[in-house]
Amino acid sequence: MGAVSAALVAGLAILVPAGAAAPRPEAAAPQGKGLDFRSCNDPTYKALECAKLRVPLDYRRPAGKKITLAVSRVKASGTPAQRQGALLVNPGGPGGSGLTFAGFIADNLPPEIAASYDVIGFDPRGVGRSTPALSCLGPNYFKPPRADYVPADADEERAWIERASSYAKACAENHSAMLPHMTTVNAARDMDRIRAALGERKTNYFGYSYGTYLGAVYGELFPKRVRRLVLDSIVDPNDVWYQANINQNYAFEARIKDFFGWVAQHDDAYHLGTSAAQVEDTYYSMRDKLEAQPAGDKVGPSELDDTFLIGGYTDAAWPILADAFSAYQGSGQTNGLVEAYDSFGAIDEAGENGYANYVAVECRDAPWPRNWVRWHLDATRGHLQAPFLTWNNTWYNAPCAFWPVPGGKPTEITGSGLPPVLLLQATKDAATPYGGAQTMHRLLDSSRLVVEDGGGNHGISLAGNECVDGHLARYLRDGTLPADRLGPDATCEPLPAPTPQGAQRTAASLGSQQHLDLVKFLRRP
Image (cartoon, rainbow, N blue to C red):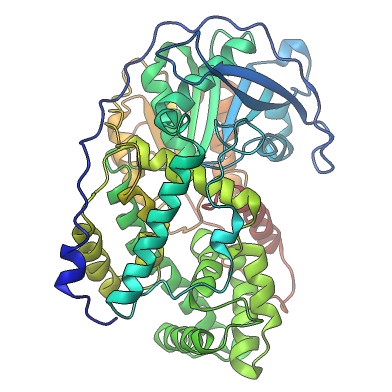
């Protein structure tokens, strides 16, 4: 990357008021009038039922303006005697839609567990079918091909800064009433309104990724209303959110190198290099060529990085990515890259809604640097060691430097008053690095940590790993947890590495496909 002038960074010193204090837990939420569930008419999840719930926009004024949450349910398949209550689920984000996620979870739970719980999904405030739904500049904001994420000079960096600023400004213009109330604390309070409307004295919760932070915040606000709590792929509650994204950059660098190494192991299939370093060089050579001529006039260097990001979330995508990579590098075929981008990297209207919610929540939840000098220096340093994601992630989060509402004080997680908690984590997870699980385990005295040792997948339960799913089933069945030990309390082997797509399909391949299906819900908007 070319040097960026001191005049640029000096001219971008932006100062705003300090973050507001985090809201305190409220008194007991009133019991709701119930939810009128009717069929969602979803072609994939036919048992899925949908309902609407009105909740306060501002919990300091509970009788004031209301917003509407979209809620879903798959009823317990067993007898009334088997029923153990509601299991609220969340796929993460922030900005992930949970409405159909309830159908996915119900379909993949062990039958004895699906017989015991009503699985409850919801679109958090601002997301999907909840209203109002956030949209700032629409999907054209992500129209490909875009400029290279890695700025070559000061002018290119300034253009990206102006782009991020324009997104923040559009969000302010479109949703001035919503933005001050787009917080994880308010999402947790919304969850408690769902609990009340269901008529449940206590709730069970199962969250992935950002959903682990949401669950931890709910447990901090309402510990006596938690019956069971499962957190899979865990956000570090002490690093929200600026530092968490920096941590991701280094973790994704390690994961993409794992992918390059796997490709090298299968050089007989892909012919991209016999070492991880050779494959990495070939990847960046491809990236340079796509800057000059985007594949299908759609996939330039930034779109390529967005596409291959899925390889950091799940090993299951590796054969798909490697096939597209090999076809382009070997014979100039672009169809594979375009198809992979359309599947994994493109952002449509729903994706822009997810992104708008992502920045709305993260920018409001916690303080962010408001002086671009800090962002520039961190990105420049980070790019030297972690070039795959650093600038990509910088621009993804950059609207927070210009956000119209100051960031608040993150909720302190103590675990006080919580029942036993199950934590699940892969040790090489990139989206939520392992350190976050270690921190959460330390903060929640009642927790037990099950790790997939050496695994890199994001989201390890209900993804084909029988060992992990056994721990999940025992906990949801009767509260059984592994014995308390120093460090992780139990260890599972990761799923086997995938095989090239032309190879014979195996049980491991089927497990990989199940994880790919899960990750479509979990990956960033």
